[in-house]
Length: 232
Image (cartoon, rainbow, N blue to C red; front, side, top):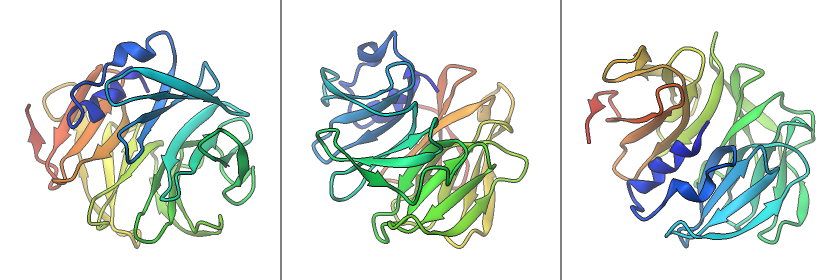
């Protein structure tokens, strides 16, 4: 992914400036209730923290190369550890609290999302070609099969009815119901309007609009929940 993923948050927080992370290697982003941004950074091996205005607040050093990132309702930080092939949990001060299940449970946990109603954690496992659905205990209770694809980002609609998975291999966003039933995909491979070359981060805002960062084309695409391409 790239610093362009911050544009997803810029739609709702216009003051965010991607220049704050230039020179780093940002992968995923999460937002706390105060609007602060948490950015997983491969090169720094850290979680970088910015305030809503884009000012650098600090960093949390992590044990391995961080990929996926999410904040739970208790304020804990879940980090996909690409070296230990698991999800490590930290408190707000950066103290390692434990893991989601065990290290080695996933191959490449590049994307994380948490269902606020159930507490379940969705892990986009690029190496396995699937999104694993986990209880807070770490028990895997389901899987969304991204057949022939490479899931690199995952997001949940505000109503919890749709799971959006950025497929970095096929230039589209796969969509699933919570029970794993596939829904119509969003986007198609290409470089034209509404087409995607290599989607990375994906996010859904309160009105259901789906934002997708295309890392090869260096641009942000927006779609209605139905998949209709939007211009803005």
